[in-house]
Length: 238
Ligand SMILES: NC(=O)c1ccc[n+]([C@@H]2O[C@H](COP(=O)([O-])OP(=O)(O)OC[C@H]3O[C@@H](n4cnc5c(N)ncnc54)[C@H](OP(=O)(O)O)[C@@H]3O)[C@@H](O)[C@H]2O)c1
Image (cartoon, rainbow, N blue to C red; front, top):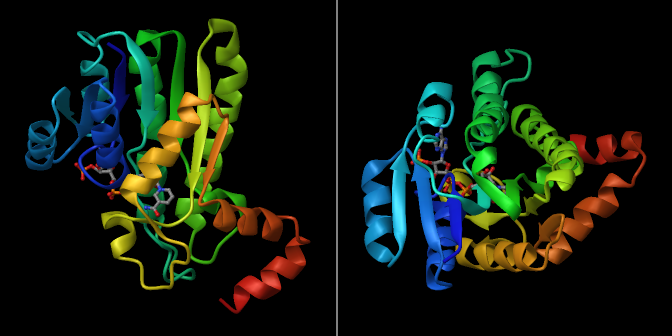
């Protein structure tokens, strides 16, 4: 039986991924902080084990390493989004918290879990299409995801000689508790179940970058080709 470890599995995309892999017959190790939601998730599947810990606490992350099974797939999905609403009164605490959750915690996980990934296995980093283009109020979130994608591409070069593969996931808008608090239009939004299917398909076909929905991420990539001065003029009006 193949084994997948998924962080941020207590809600949204991570929960949908856990249920998807459970239905495919995988052993799922679902991680998060909220024990009640993890317990509900375990009851919804046939082969879902759960682990509750805070990804931003390196000691808690390291403590999970000792009796971990061999992994075919390791999905770093846990994440947070906070917007910088008043740029002049720049919220350095919020910035630090987002970078800590979306980026530094991944390093803690790599240190603790990479040695458990089998040869021929895969590490997946859930980044965001926000990393393709500088967006208003996204100083913290966008920076964390741009750095995460860079980390993934760099890892993909260095892990190749260890026969471990890497995929970077760059979703557009997915309907989850994270986006429920957004106060702006979210075009081409899809469900977390649809996102899980796209991600699992991309993983199964060995894609290095898993970008969806196609039309939305295409639009982001085209806008990213504009001279920055022109994009800046458009973005200021957003
Ligand atoms: N939704 C979108 O439109 C969208 C688009 C692009 C990228 N993404 C990315 O997709 C990933 C999943 O997001 P989502 O939309 O599914 O959000 P979500 O429903 O809010 O889920 C976030 C998950 O991350 C976990 N998490 C957060 N901080 C943690 C911490 N310090 N330690 C352990 N677990 C922590 C949460 O666990 P607890 O609740 O148990 O604390 C939860 O399971 C994120 O990396 C996000 O940036 C989402």
